[in-house]
Length: 357
Image 1 (cartoon, one colour):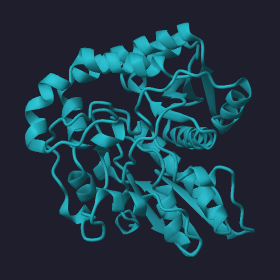
Image 2 (cartoon, one colour; image 1 turned 30 degrees about the vertical axis):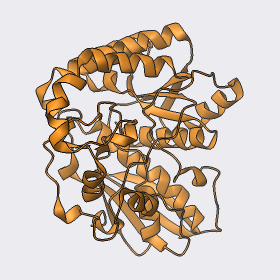
Image 3 (cartoon, rainbow, N blue to C red; image 1 turned 45 degrees about the horizontal axis):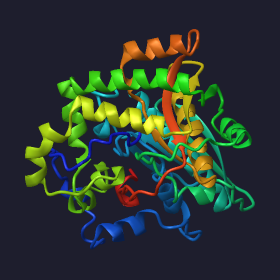
């Protein structure tokens, strides 16, 4: 899922810039693009403003794999299949989780504009039927433009039990449970699954080529596409492609990346594992909604989080992790670390006009 690689330290990529997605005409700099992307909710913005806030949700590789359709009293979120990641996500699990994250943001933004959404999942789309209601600003609304998946080392401080209970409530959904793990031995055991999954993926050429295609290594590339994994959002420097390309085999190694994952999880207060009752698209959407609520509450509490989903993305490890966690017939859907950490630069989102069908 969502924005999870620390490998961004100026590595070269073969991604083709898509001119039709360029934001350069309206944003002179990366900082301009960040301000436009993460601006506070504009209550006069109508349906398009709700869409903008929906797109601020977490999503896999920052692919933004969604298309919005607007009706007189409804809006729908459907998959954008051109933005699939078949190597890391062959069954579109992460894609539908991403749609669920967007749907959760949509509910908070709509209520703030005086519209009560009723969500339903049919076929492959989420439809929100909207009716007039009193304006409601949920406690999570303000966290939407501040949330980010923070791929950095945290400070290791524990989270108080009362806050853990709040996070557990936020991360529980319809047919979705959350396991909060703060025991260091259990965290170390799950770290082993993360490291094994990372090793497996790094030895998979298809996975690596797909990952590289979504990397953005400097501000110019990030602004040109307004998507993908920008190096600075992982705390790494922005470098020109001509310099990054020859550095690839030296800075991106199994041992180096695995050491980073051990350090990052070891510095976290805990791990959250999201588990759905059934392994299907409807439940993956609900996993996304639950995870987004967890992320927004964590943000409002001053906490950071990041995805460490490798054990979910490698089928044999997903089954092994399910056995370790005693999940019975259920499977883990997301693995997230959380704790207190630094602010990092923001990722970008495509303009609303580009995501409305």
